[in-house]
Image 1 (tube, rainbow, N blue to C red):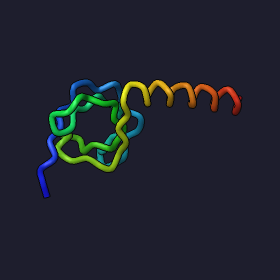
Image 2: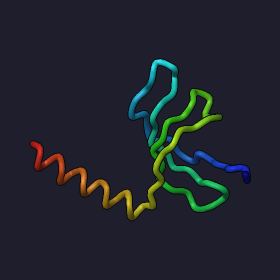
Image 3: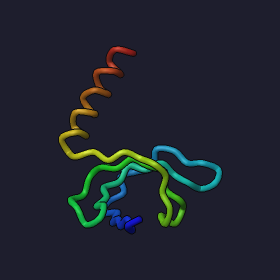
Image 4: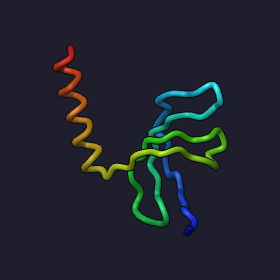
Length: 76
């Protein structure tokens, strides 16, 4: 299995934290030298290990923001 490389270019914040120290974070990550994408996933305290997550292009992230705003407005 080929090695996966990553470069966390910016950390926007922590969404949640487990007792183990793992944190669900919103970051900007370059995977395998590609263009950086918005990324939501769990990270170990030292950022050496990661859980499954989701990556989004800027356009996808903008759509998600719109969907969330509409959902929050409907839920009141």
